[in-house]
Length: 438
Image (cartoon, rainbow, N blue to C red; front, side, top):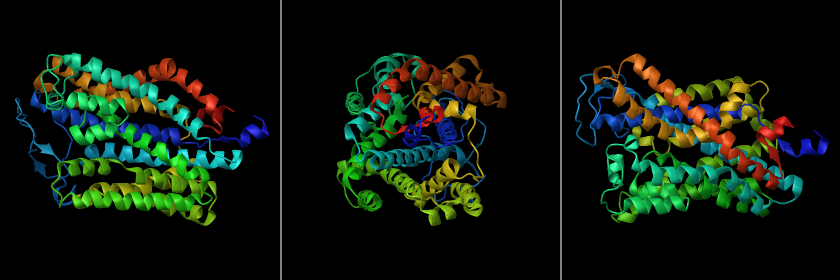
């Protein structure tokens, strides 16, 4: 690599490993969630917990409960259920991590581009995002709306019926939520669809892609001309957070139906987490040594990992709408250490983790389809009295994770790569795998 090319490259070790583990956390949560929804037709036990009680865990930790299902179960399981916040919280935390990481990486690259090229090319930025995200997003969109609803093997009790999807495949008369959701997804507003209609079967996880795309739409415009990016980022963080708090809290006093939609929309839109990642990228890019020395300190590193466990098991449910800020701060500390601290306690720069992180976008986008399909397969081939045996659950999880990785690899190699190559034409600061190879 020439000196000029090296100067124009950015590579952060270990981040692919973090990407994979975040995607894996989402899989664990969605396996248990789908098992809960499938309880209307099959006696799946699940580790899901509804977070509307007085505590996430705390006084309820380890106490047997009988969940209040939103629908009548046809087959009742005699086995007692147990609260386990790890399963219900792992996925949301994985998504928060993705938001912080996205803000961190995008901001660092924008700062580097502005510093090295004297400007941020907005058109090139948008095209890079389009080539990386849109092909797989719209492929999943077509599958989710035009193919899977026709296949009984991808029917999700309760959830599918909301959108007029028949258990036998095909459509039944509904209130129009299917086509309303279809249009929202078509215009890359899946988070708005989620706020209005609820989560769409098999591809509902795409709501977070909408949040990221909305962030990408405004973020480079904010950083393009300012000479004080830190001030701009902090103001964006504070203003968005204030508006969000107002919309969410005011919902308790406003009876308009649309306000409930706005409340849910803003609650899901974790743009403040992406801004937090951007602020962390600025600190690293500008080499704010005093702050970095504090972040790099072993006690801070250990504290960040222990804090995740503490927050997970002892946070009152009343704080659930703001606890993502604490997690976002912790994740930012971890990201900065893993990617830039030679003495990081966590080392994730390994060939197999690089591979898994490289296909993590596919893992995130395909995993729900795999989960639903394999749960239906279990219902067909495993006797009801054996479905919750440990070996069946081990086989189920292994199959879901393995098949999702395989599908994501094939998608990356034979579909996504074609568009990624085109993306390089508009790359101004080389990053990721290309920077490592160089």
